[in-house]
Length: 166
View 1 (tube, rainbow, N blue to C red):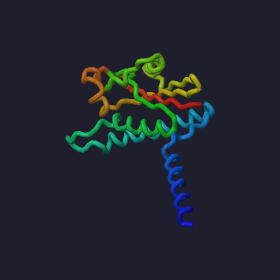
View 2: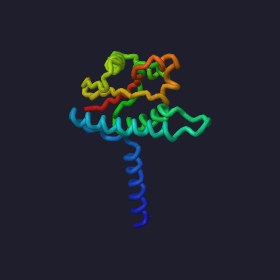
View 3: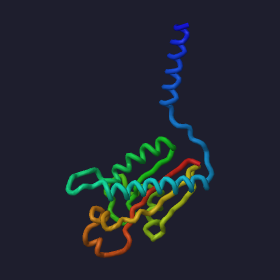
Protein backbone atom coordinates (compact mmCIF):
# COMPACT_ATOMS: atom_id res chain seq x y z
CA UNK A 1 0.00 0.00 0.00
CA UNK A 2 2.73 2.46 0.94
CA UNK A 3 4.68 1.59 -2.23
CA UNK A 4 1.56 2.13 -4.39
CA UNK A 5 0.99 5.49 -2.76
CA UNK A 6 4.59 6.60 -3.23
CA UNK A 7 4.52 5.70 -6.95
CA UNK A 8 1.23 7.59 -7.29
CA UNK A 9 2.77 10.54 -5.44
CA UNK A 10 5.87 10.45 -7.64
CA UNK A 11 3.85 10.47 -10.88
CA UNK A 12 1.55 13.17 -9.51
CA UNK A 13 4.62 15.28 -8.76
CA UNK A 14 5.97 14.72 -12.31
CA UNK A 15 2.57 15.59 -13.85
CA UNK A 16 2.15 18.76 -11.76
CA UNK A 17 5.71 19.83 -12.56
CA UNK A 18 5.11 19.28 -16.28
CA UNK A 19 1.90 21.33 -16.13
CA UNK A 20 3.65 24.19 -14.36
CA UNK A 21 6.56 24.16 -16.80
CA UNK A 22 4.42 24.10 -19.95
CA UNK A 23 3.59 27.27 -21.82
CA UNK A 24 0.14 28.81 -21.32
CA UNK A 25 -2.54 27.69 -23.76
CA UNK A 26 -3.47 30.49 -26.15
CA UNK A 27 -7.04 30.69 -27.40
CA UNK A 28 -8.22 32.47 -30.53
CA UNK A 29 -10.21 35.64 -29.89
CA UNK A 30 -12.23 38.12 -31.92
CA UNK A 31 -11.08 41.59 -32.93
CA UNK A 32 -13.50 43.16 -30.41
CA UNK A 33 -12.07 41.00 -27.64
CA UNK A 34 -8.52 41.89 -28.72
CA UNK A 35 -9.43 45.59 -28.65
CA UNK A 36 -10.85 45.23 -25.13
CA UNK A 37 -7.76 43.38 -23.94
CA UNK A 38 -5.47 46.02 -25.44
CA UNK A 39 -7.36 48.75 -23.57
CA UNK A 40 -7.04 46.77 -20.34
CA UNK A 41 -3.31 46.20 -20.85
CA UNK A 42 -2.80 49.86 -21.70
CA UNK A 43 -4.60 50.86 -18.53
CA UNK A 44 -2.38 48.61 -16.42
CA UNK A 45 0.84 49.65 -18.15
CA UNK A 46 0.10 53.38 -18.12
CA UNK A 47 -1.10 53.37 -14.54
CA UNK A 48 2.00 51.48 -13.44
CA UNK A 49 4.27 53.82 -15.37
CA UNK A 50 2.66 56.96 -13.94
CA UNK A 51 2.71 55.65 -10.38
CA UNK A 52 6.34 54.61 -10.65
CA UNK A 53 7.25 58.08 -11.89
CA UNK A 54 5.38 59.70 -8.99
CA UNK A 55 6.55 57.43 -6.19
CA UNK A 56 9.60 55.61 -7.42
CA UNK A 57 12.26 58.28 -7.26
CA UNK A 58 13.45 59.47 -3.87
CA UNK A 59 15.63 62.54 -3.92
CA UNK A 60 18.94 62.09 -5.67
CA UNK A 61 19.18 58.32 -5.31
CA UNK A 62 19.79 56.49 -8.56
CA UNK A 63 17.09 54.07 -9.55
CA UNK A 64 16.21 52.16 -12.71
CA UNK A 65 14.30 54.13 -15.32
CA UNK A 66 10.56 53.30 -14.96
CA UNK A 67 10.06 52.46 -18.64
CA UNK A 68 12.94 49.97 -18.38
CA UNK A 69 11.31 48.37 -15.34
CA UNK A 70 8.07 48.27 -17.33
CA UNK A 71 9.84 46.23 -20.01
CA UNK A 72 10.28 43.55 -17.36
CA UNK A 73 6.51 43.72 -16.79
CA UNK A 74 5.99 43.46 -20.57
CA UNK A 75 8.13 40.31 -20.76
CA UNK A 76 6.12 38.57 -18.05
CA UNK A 77 2.72 39.66 -19.37
CA UNK A 78 3.75 38.78 -22.94
CA UNK A 79 4.91 35.32 -21.87
CA UNK A 80 1.71 34.65 -19.93
CA UNK A 81 -0.63 35.92 -22.65
CA UNK A 82 1.12 35.33 -25.98
CA UNK A 83 1.25 39.08 -26.54
CA UNK A 84 4.08 41.32 -27.68
CA UNK A 85 4.43 44.73 -26.00
CA UNK A 86 7.07 47.37 -26.60
CA UNK A 87 7.89 51.08 -26.58
CA UNK A 88 8.65 53.05 -29.72
CA UNK A 89 9.99 56.56 -30.15
CA UNK A 90 7.52 58.85 -31.95
CA UNK A 91 8.51 62.52 -31.98
CA UNK A 92 11.41 62.52 -29.51
CA UNK A 93 14.77 60.74 -29.67
CA UNK A 94 14.71 57.04 -28.75
CA UNK A 95 16.02 56.49 -25.23
CA UNK A 96 17.26 53.02 -26.23
CA UNK A 97 18.13 51.60 -29.67
CA UNK A 98 15.38 48.96 -29.25
CA UNK A 99 12.79 51.78 -29.14
CA UNK A 100 13.71 53.16 -32.56
CA UNK A 101 11.00 52.24 -35.12
CA UNK A 102 12.84 49.89 -37.48
CA UNK A 103 10.37 47.80 -39.46
CA UNK A 104 7.51 48.96 -41.68
CA UNK A 105 4.93 48.36 -38.96
CA UNK A 106 6.59 50.39 -36.20
CA UNK A 107 7.44 53.16 -38.68
CA UNK A 108 3.77 53.30 -39.75
CA UNK A 109 2.65 53.41 -36.11
CA UNK A 110 5.13 56.20 -35.26
CA UNK A 111 4.06 58.23 -38.31
CA UNK A 112 0.38 57.80 -37.38
CA UNK A 113 0.94 58.82 -33.74
CA UNK A 114 3.17 61.73 -34.78
CA UNK A 115 0.20 63.25 -36.64
CA UNK A 116 -1.59 63.83 -33.29
CA UNK A 117 -3.74 60.72 -33.57
CA UNK A 118 -3.82 58.79 -30.30
CA UNK A 119 -4.42 55.25 -31.57
CA UNK A 120 -3.32 53.02 -34.44
CA UNK A 121 -4.96 49.64 -35.12
CA UNK A 122 -4.25 46.96 -37.70
CA UNK A 123 -5.06 43.30 -38.17
CA UNK A 124 -2.21 41.38 -39.78
CA UNK A 125 -1.28 37.69 -39.88
CA UNK A 126 -4.01 36.75 -37.38
CA UNK A 127 -2.76 39.35 -34.89
CA UNK A 128 -4.45 42.48 -33.58
CA UNK A 129 -1.88 45.28 -33.46
CA UNK A 130 -2.49 48.44 -31.46
CA UNK A 131 -0.27 51.48 -31.07
CA UNK A 132 -1.13 54.21 -28.57
CA UNK A 133 0.49 57.54 -27.93
CA UNK A 134 1.96 58.17 -24.48
CA UNK A 135 2.16 61.85 -23.59
CA UNK A 136 5.56 62.86 -22.24
CA UNK A 137 4.80 65.36 -19.50
CA UNK A 138 7.33 67.97 -18.31
CA UNK A 139 8.82 65.55 -15.78
CA UNK A 140 9.36 63.02 -18.59
CA UNK A 141 10.77 65.58 -21.01
CA UNK A 142 13.66 66.41 -18.67
CA UNK A 143 15.26 63.15 -19.80
CA UNK A 144 13.59 62.52 -23.15
CA UNK A 145 14.24 65.81 -24.95
CA UNK A 146 16.67 68.71 -24.86
CA UNK A 147 15.81 72.00 -23.15
CA UNK A 148 15.58 73.69 -26.56
CA UNK A 149 13.12 71.10 -27.85
CA UNK A 150 11.04 71.49 -24.68
CA UNK A 151 10.74 75.23 -25.37
CA UNK A 152 9.64 74.65 -28.97
CA UNK A 153 6.33 73.45 -27.64
CA UNK A 154 4.01 70.93 -29.12
CA UNK A 155 2.91 67.67 -27.63
CA UNK A 156 5.76 65.21 -27.13
CA UNK A 157 4.79 61.55 -27.27
CA UNK A 158 6.22 58.07 -27.22
CA UNK A 159 4.35 55.00 -28.38
CA UNK A 160 3.17 51.80 -26.72
CA UNK A 161 2.68 48.93 -29.19
CA UNK A 162 0.75 45.81 -28.18
CA UNK A 163 0.15 42.79 -30.42
CA UNK A 164 -2.37 40.07 -29.54
CA UNK A 165 -3.04 36.82 -31.39
CA UNK A 166 -6.58 36.51 -32.74
